[in-house]
Length: 453
Image 1 (cartoon, helix red, strand yellow):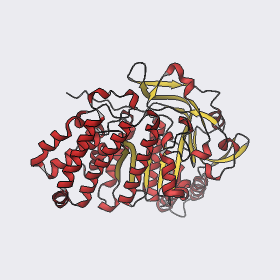
Image 2 (tube, one colour; image 1 turned 60 degrees about the vertical axis):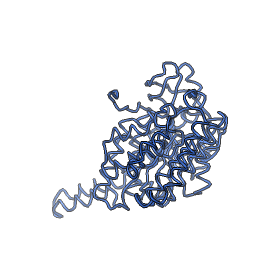
Image 3 (cartoon, rainbow, N blue to C red; image 1 turned 180 degrees about the vertical axis):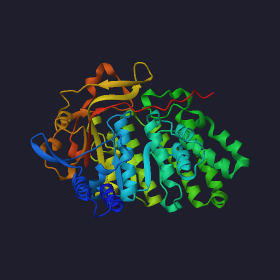
Image 4 (spheres, rainbow, N blue to C red; image 1 turned 45 degrees about the horizontal axis):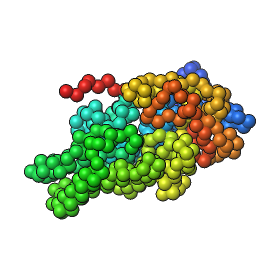
């Protein structure tokens, strides 16, 4: 790929007469542009570090990411986290990074912390233009991704795929096993397409799964379990297993093996959801992360293409999740599977706005966090100077990154009355290969949906 500044330089030379009196000035300006490499030396703690200033909300200009090409192009999986589930700059920066990895490093597979079955309609939309983007996004089920920032990325992926051969098209996958509804609806869609005469019988067998809407992004202790017990879900899972075992050959003939395998994977995800539902609160996080890593491995082995994974900081980190009582997390499993081919990037912010679910009002709200003097790592990064920047932690010996420092860590829900408790310790160099720091954040923009009638 040609550096965009170099491309502009070449374009200038083609547009102007070589004898033009303005040529020396044009050459100077072009060379200056080329030499304005987006990296700078700053003081972080007691050490001088090389950082790469970023423009997170400019998602169409990749000049600030060009220096990262050598760092990321030969990885198999790049995992990018977020310090909240509702920050515009995090979402836009991840969107920008994925676009860069696609256009400069040959990445082709996008994955996100959402149910696999619930993302299949998004995949159909970007591959074949089926349906409309808002309906496709609704299937993901998580309010966290129902934003204008994610919508813009999906539309970009669809546009990028236009005119591409099948083996070069981008694909969109979910890898989270928390939902019964996502895989159940995906299986019903498959049967409806290739075995329509038996669809009513199959949907009847799914029973409560297709309308159980309370299992998206939930912790077991907050889920109303009176509506469906584990035994009933286990019976439905057995029904689906038997159904697909008996119809495997005709289904493969009707849809082809690949589509059958893709549909059948929903059964595994459904079993994972049941495993989570039956687990204790203490084991839930570990089991969920291990299942997510297993699903990402399955997606990678299916596609045999470089992959981007979008999730929370607490999932993508490659050592014990110090945010949550040193829990084993997805990134540890991915590091074991892929080794140095897995590169993980965490996010840190200093202050600003974000959207989250209010545990008090039980509604979505925009919250604000101030600069907090006890966030020792965030404070040090804020003093470095750039409003937003990337730093590669694999090449630094700065003690600040190898000792505990506090940062903000917010999940799906938030209690403003105890905001100081969202300051958590982190050993950055152990948990991430790289960090992106955003000094001041703004809230992600939720899609304004009209109520479904």
